[in-house]
Length: 228
Image (cartoon, rainbow, N blue to C red; front, side):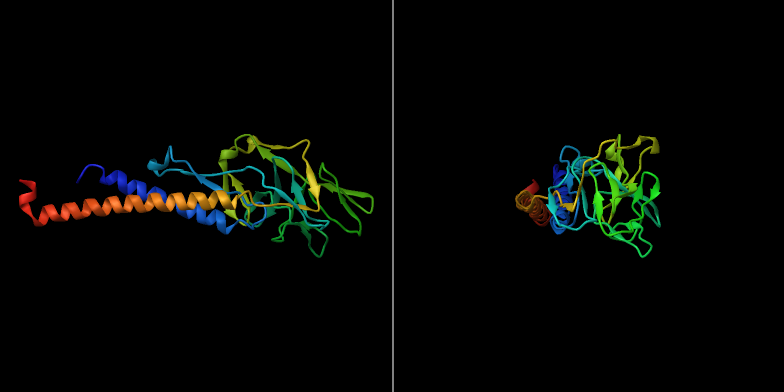
């Protein structure tokens, strides 16, 4: 095998992975609270754990809906799903028929004392997560964070699981929650498009180099005089 061919193949695979990652980021630019993935080129050739999630908060957008909330700093909402506890920054909340506060998938949003029920007309959600319904306190939205966020794993529907030690999960004492706002994706379209063009060009260069080596090897096999 001609020296360098393995490196070129690895390079092509890395560029392909990066292209797929960028494409997924762009596809979710309109997904509430979506967190983009990034590829680390310093470790890319190992092809092991090369994708990481950028947890930088996205910009927030006013919606006017009483049950929409956005986190203005670090932290996650805690949700009870059929598969167990999940974490999300998507504050698109709604109510079930029994007035239980849920996320957009119908899964209960957990408060500091368990489930939260909102039965009334005037809903006020304070920056610390306390919910007042017609002036009555009805619970406080729980916001948690992680000592080692690198152990967070995406699961789809803007959910995360935590693969680290449960003792690393702690309650955020002074969260900053904004009612009637939603966090947007942290994907920057211009930045991702530039990365996509750069990645495509790099991939094409690697492919052309592989083709040149393949053509050279073919000539050497078919014309023995070239190797004498």
